[in-house]
Figure 1: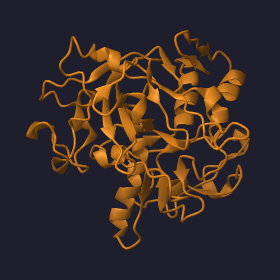
Figure 2: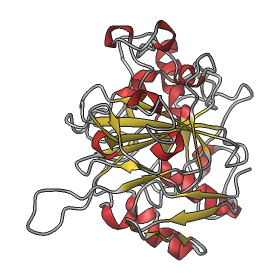
Figure 3: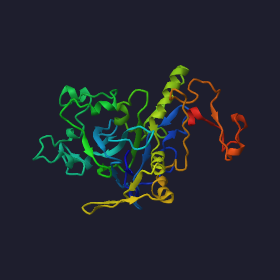
Figure 4: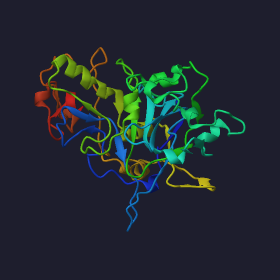
Length: 349
């Protein structure tokens, strides 16, 4: 199990999420029972008397392997997929961290790579003939985008896992926790945490499509069509369990005694110093404060097949009622005192 993780961005240069329109979870302002955002969207700070937002550094959350992909909506932006080298949380199989909104010009200009902490893993143009943007993983692209050879063709419908198939000479870049990966675009950037589930692997469409101009449906949204059969609607809703809210990830790391490091500000040439989260107060003031969902508690109850506890519609509407005093809880949910309002576990759990 990993001994430490890093926060994914410079905290001094990013705004705290101000509304649910950017937060992970049901889209409150647009049919929340059928639309679920799996991206946590963030923005750079906007200094006084300016219209240009700051561009925070992105940092590797953990040791792992990197692939870079082109964003389909904005030709100036990239997405980075980080596959962890080892388990981070017991019982939580994290497969990928996806960084959305990386500025292309923070890694290369034209066909010339810049010397950055990430590209330094490739050597330089004198020592490595493959010191070109394609070596970051951009060689893996749709057939109509002219990949270097057919073996690199990857359509949006292909799995993210296909980026890491060891079938070519182009190996993933190995990074260490806390290493800078590039600059986020201050207008909007995002983080997704994808888990391993019994369902199909997430597709590259999730990595390549970071849309931020359709509020409140910003980011990647799992949308349930009410025209589908109830069985298909249930199966689609289960995909929600393939994603983890980043604020819940860091909270779980703290509870599991996984060390959390935050880099408030990275200073070029002088390097950067990290702050280690040693108390719940510091966790709140340095990490949780960045998320609209701070203070949210997620309850995950599964049936014997690892699906939602009411996946087979055995328990009526599937409401869960919580009580503040365990001595007052009864076996029947109808007798339990509600913590706030009755919640439908299946759509809001």
